Image 1 (cartoon, rainbow, N blue to C red):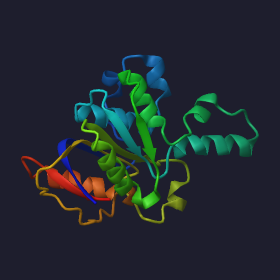
Image 2 (image 1 turned 90 degrees about the vertical axis):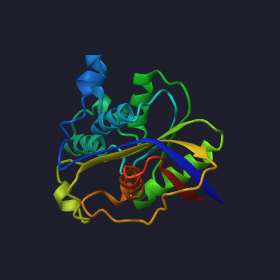
Image 3 (image 1 turned 120 degrees about the vertical axis):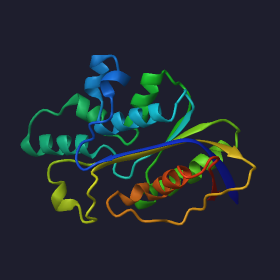
Length: 214
């Protein structure tokens, strides 16, 4: 089964350690909410703003989840100190999508996908099936793992420790002009590769349409 998705808008952001372009003060006016945001949530909110998100349904993907919060919890357990309630709350995979929903007052459907290096492809397939309903969807894929000790665990030699891709899509019967070729981007987490490939290819097209094979 093949489903064609029209790319209405796309956005990408990455940084070696910590992106300074996320505009969280402008996008999140409430200071208390802003202080609770994880790095992944800040990236997701920024990307959603760049593609003109308007309370569409969300398919969110993350291979590693909120590892920074998880590391904080593990360190607290190891050091026998009190666990941070905020870190515990922020340690689940769907944290970025949850904060985006709160900020946008979106009570609609949010689906979170985690499939390690195939996360990007799984987000696309899940989104394609859901798009058959006929509405627009926001496809998000974010990973942020700039945590203490990452150098010892980074066996993939990834240099961009924060990265995210957003695609605003809808189903179409028009012919596809983008085929996924599984291009590798050595400095970016493999969990983002397919969506990043679509982002780059769509920038060169007036009406980008990608074919998703289910």
